[in-house]
Amino acid sequence: MKRSLLVVAAGMLAVALFVLGAFFYAGKKDERAVNLAQINRDALVRPHSPIYGNPNAKVTIVEFLDPACETCRAFYPFVKGMINASFGQVNLAVRYAPLHHGSDEAVKILEAARMQNLYWPVIEAMFAAQPIWASHEAPRPALIWENIKGTGLDIAKAKADLDDPRIAKILLQDVADVETLRLTKTPGFFVNGKPLVDFGSSQLKALVDQEVRAAYGK
Image 1 (cartoon, rainbow, N blue to C red):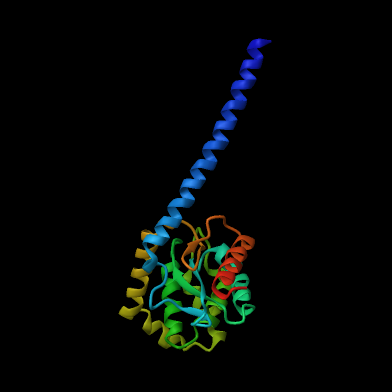
Image 2 (cartoon, rainbow, N blue to C red):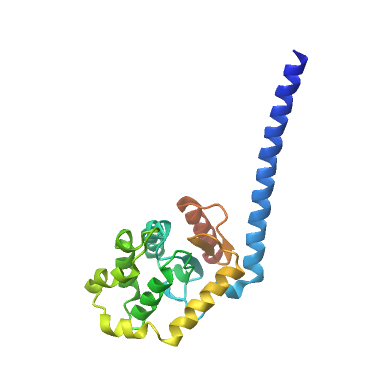
């Protein structure tokens, strides 16, 4: 009987230590993310970053996204809706984290579209067609072109612009910043320099609301 109790007690202790260790590890991981963002603030937003919303907003959501990421696709209307409802108090800065195979080609297409002032219509069309071109097993980014024709994009010009050195420079800088911030999954969110350490839509909204109150006194 005593031996059974000892075994049960030992098992409970092991579980408690595991849970405690998990919380400790998560806490340290969150702390590292905060410190990295504070130390490397320049890596969050670059002059080339596409901005959605009021460029003078006091609250900026930085999103490191991958055009082939399903979660990025799901979050896009949510983030856009928050910004549209913010009365100019919040904007979005897009950064690229092309972690999936073929995503770098999608990023180049987005930047070519930006040269024609069609960035936002094209990214929406690209996300809408994501199930068609962004298979993880066999991505086919070439299919993007057919699915963004309705945006008014000059396809021939956009294809010619893919090799523009400015686009290559943007892609290289964003990938370097992903490595600096040690981001390993998308989307990665920061709000006024603070990382979203507890991922979720409600958590993101809470962090945005917190920063709006701090910036605007509401």
